[in-house]
Amino acid sequence: MFYLQVPDINVSILDIEDSALSRLGHFATYSKLTNKQNHLRYLRNSSLLDYSGFLSLRTHASLTDDQALKEMVIEGECRLISERLNLMKPNYLRKYLIKIIDDISLFDVTNDNIDVLLKFCSEYKDKQHVPCNEHCSAQSIEVPWQKCLTLVSNRKVHLNQGIAIVPCNQWNSVLVDLFRIIYIKSLRTIRRSMSASNSNNLQIEYLSEKINGYYNSKIAFWKNIDKQVSLEELISNKISIPPCMLLSLNSLFTNHRLAHDPRYRLTLFLKDIGIPFEQTLTLFQQEYSKCGNLGSACTHSWDKHHKQIEYNVRHTYGMVGSKKDYQMTSCVLMQVYFINFSRI
Image (cartoon, rainbow, N blue to C red):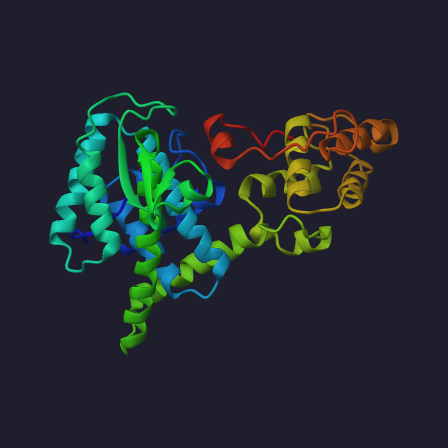
């Protein structure tokens, strides 16, 4: 969450690495905490692993010159805290607000952001009514308008001489905005501190290398779907393909056939990363023109079924039929529903 105080951490460097990479993967996919993830334990609120991931990514974001990565971490942390606040039960939320207040009392740096956070949490914890729906305005808190820019830009608060009057249904949004302001300021502080230090930290260097490697190979490589990617580039960068898609692609190359669901999801993946329709169709034409494995679940061939295969690819690309912009199933949902990619 805010993590204004540094707890004692007794966690192995490998667990810290897993925490950071799992957190970054969560930010990249914007998966919900309610989904059952394999690495959910790394995102359990206020745990040592949660803090380890938070600290590692914050340090990396403060030092990196990759603005896209930095923005992903910042907005990922903001989205995460928003998700958590919305999931908190009233009693737990009050305890959390009190924890922030206690941490501020031990904080060795005071500024206007911390002062506003202290005032806001002190009033929020004494909220008199529950529950509070999206239209509720039974209570309000006043904060400087600069501290709740999201609400101001969306015109969800009244302004009076530079003061925003925030209704209770928007109090969580104020906490997220305050978190963003304090987090960004902490990045600048950490960068200055690290720049002033002449000593090298081997743990930070190790984690930076792992985070950069994960980001560049698993996230950034396929991030810009507006740019077309050639099939040749895809094949030459197999290491960057998610394991489930690589399994389907290798199965296609080995058996020259794919069952319907793996073929549909592979087509969606190729579409989403920017492979042109013509190249995807050529891929299936090349493979389905070959003699398929007798044990394959798919018995189609290009000679007999090319019209059906071409229609399916066009439909998945949103070119025929309803022309819907189909989206690739998230990794989290595929894990939840145990979608099988190995059945050929």
